[in-house]
Image (cartoon, rainbow, N blue to C red; front, top):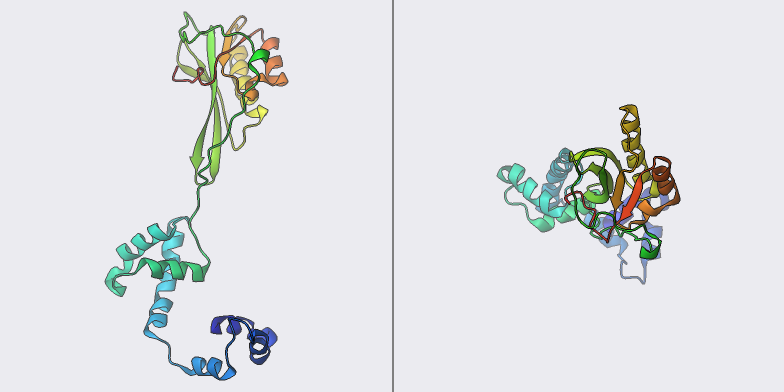
Length: 238
């Protein structure tokens, strides 16, 4: 409570703040406030003042992402010799005083959406992931990776014959352009190298990104044949 009054006394004054707090759980007497201010600092508060800059330095040295548990271990590893054992509750309290916290990763996995099976092309692969030559069968898939900054989505197109990734894209979203950009990369590379993709089978699962109008148009314009299997059977691990 004293800290709160000290933070606002220059703007509002000590006595007006104390009067406003009367009748609340935070009420304090004027005499108690000034008596506390005259009291010599406790051993804990003096230790806290020494620990605070050390704690902030450790936090910033570790990319400002450590939570209480990692900060507790780091502080004891680096400063226990000077300060003695540092309790976890002490680290937690000082972190709150500094207004710092660890990076919290989202636990919820992204959800994918599937197109209606009745609107999808037939399955021309039937899980036979083999090809006699390049540009006969491509398989496409979208995966996601959790990072400190959130979920990252990656789209890959693999030539089954050579096991070469012919197109890819990485973004922070799962919009249609994620898949289409990877497809356009693959097709542009083949055209640039003078390779013919006519009749090539493009196999994927039923994710809506693969069933978008623009994705289908890109396949049709290149005379690539779409093939769609059940959920998960176009994984690049085949």
